Image: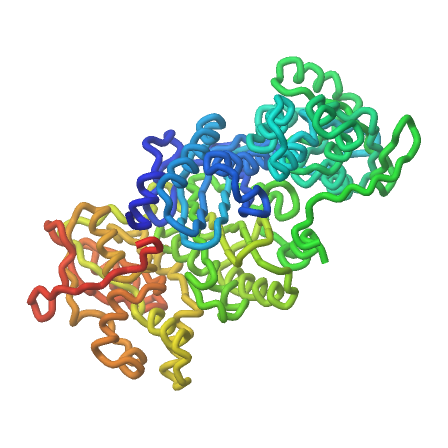
Length: 317
Length: 317
């Protein structure tokens, strides 16, 4: 089966919503943008052995490839709509492709995203997805809007995905805690709905992919603020405690990476809006600190500054 | 120098046009789409050793990575506006990055395209660009609009790029013909202006990347037509004749690949519009055949059907 047949078989959607005027199969796709909406675009690439262990199942790779991109839309408060896929694979293994396509389309259906174009080439495994979304004019979230005094929140339980990666790498035995962590790594749940809610009142937002502390430093730098992070305020993961102990659990929470949770700030006057939104939301959010007029991100334990040497992932560091 | 510094240094544009509301540096970019325009999106990926010889200079790789994507915009009659870049490199070599960025930004400036986002990861060399463009509502070109009787044209001189690749692979000696062919491979000139003109009167268009005959078969199949290709009507490349001889020159023209010329059809009644447009254009276009009511693409020499075993590039064939 040739390249063109493969693409056609596994990556041609059977139907499009009316905003896709021309889908997969021509030199490019054509989409309609509703009036009053802005286009939001991002790209995220995952490489075998770098972003996931080589033994990861093709279904999970497909899910993950889209999920990490959806997380960028969530961080902007945008509604994901379309994607293009660049798939570089060493061999055209039909089983692999079928399972990868199933993982990709499962997340695509869950988040209502349509595949509108792609390129399949031969080479070392590399999956790049470009995500396209829409956001109301002048209502998107950025990393740079936080002000001193804004309260700092994180969604979900950061660190569990990092623990899940460790479980996978070390082939640890399979208790329910192991399984829970593994699922958090393999099936990140991009916080698209939360991002859409935050749009109304958050001052800044970004997704946590490189580790909470590293990403908080980026948000702080982009906003020109410092931040105080309360270590005792971090969401507690029973599964991380169970598998790795209390001390390692905190390390995972601060620098585990791969969480795809949202880190965001809310002005004190808008906290009631947040609380009201969270009542109707599907994900827990925890207040973990406050933005400051300083230049640095500080970690505090019971009010005492605590040096933490947590480094996020730097590909070439 | 870490990943984030590298990205910042080489891939942060110094300025944006007003339609880029948020550029590189946040979780995603935000762009304004003018009223009455549709969004056009495509992705093309190039891999070392597959799409270009490993010894290709980083400047040429940067140029080429964008040019192959611009060619997709040209084929749609779209105006390219923005791109995201997924760059997978084995090591963070500063010289390589600086030269790659220079090649990329040279073509970006020439075609007025802005880099709005990207992802740099570690791994085997793989460059994927997602191109975003705009087109007037209901005025884009497709592969599927050709009708029997429409005249078939190609821009430029197909085959020269394929000859240039052969020159490079075989380290042939450097006459001016060698140099000309090499340049046609290393510096494809996407036919964006031609595509914009064709929008007004062409019935179908696509870009020639996998070889003229292979791509003509795709256009014919998409349009539900056959086609007769006149071998004696193919544009003659003096450089191909000079380096490889007459017979090989024809083979390159039919199946060389990497041309990034436009293959398009025009109804007989619109030929005068084409001729008028070409008077003001920068690239020669040659009539090479006619669409038919048949099912197949046939090659004719002096009116006699001539079997040609020309296969385009199929990654997994």
